[in-house]
Image (cartoon, rainbow, N blue to C red; front, side, top):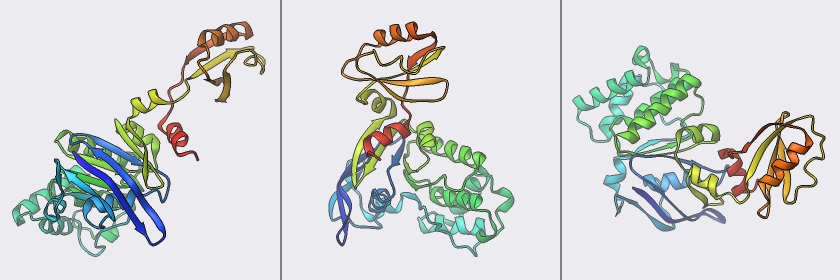
Length: 296
């Protein structure tokens, strides 16, 4: 498990991290989400040893991380971290060697990831000649070329088309299945929800919600139901104690129940109002959970 424990970091008067703690278990893909400026990149850079915390500790396998340990981590930055004039194959071999791989191992690793990420026809091209999506694939290959046990990725899906995003997702699953701890940040919450079982939400430098997505759904304060009716007037909810309209999609209304309101009373009122086409619990999306805990 990779653990970030009580991390604090300031930039002058700006508080970037304020006691942030989170855990990334080996064998899992964890989503790390939050508004712009919430502290995601700062936390990642501290985990990698690029920045030093003002307070707190980073641990891997229950031991404080050292420079040698951090050297074995894989990192994919949000900004392009590639040499534009280098050819793809040479670039990956060079970066694998920087992580301590012998030349023969570095060559094999570069070839393996070039093929796995669909870059075979572009291995002799310069990085600057590639599309942004293919540069993103090269950047992932660079993070993987030394087979890291910890993989930290900052907005890895940025600029990828659906096929590229699918390939990226498969690779992250494969690395987790092989025993790596994988954490990535993203603003694409529907994608995080699809890929990750576990998520940590950060705001103002603190973790404001963390756990498996299903646990976060269960812990939400008020239940919601999606009710679809035919022939009902707009005011049919008015007589149901504790029921409040929370949205709708044109065909159905989303009803939130407050203060232990009875869903059977809601169903009875719906039946009186018209023909009930659908009456079912509404599973909140990760985007809805995010808005609730962040508050904006």
